[in-house]
Image (cartoon, rainbow, N blue to C red; front, top):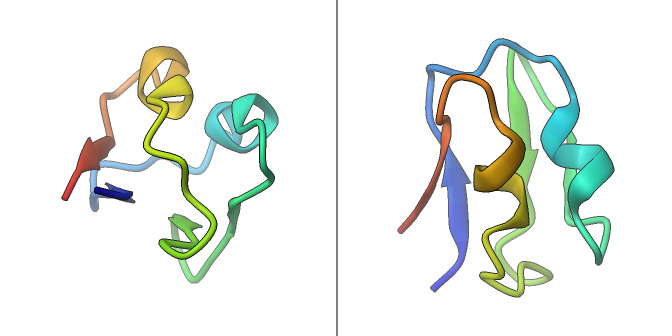
Length: 56
């Protein structure tokens, strides 16, 4: 299942830089993950300082 970024996101961009497929982009007030491109690898969750990315 794809990861999704919660409202806890502080828009630091750490997750986007870590995504191996470029599925994360800055959205409206927080970063967003393209569920179609997400590999569910968890790299984003591993670098997020606030634990915003979670598996759906």
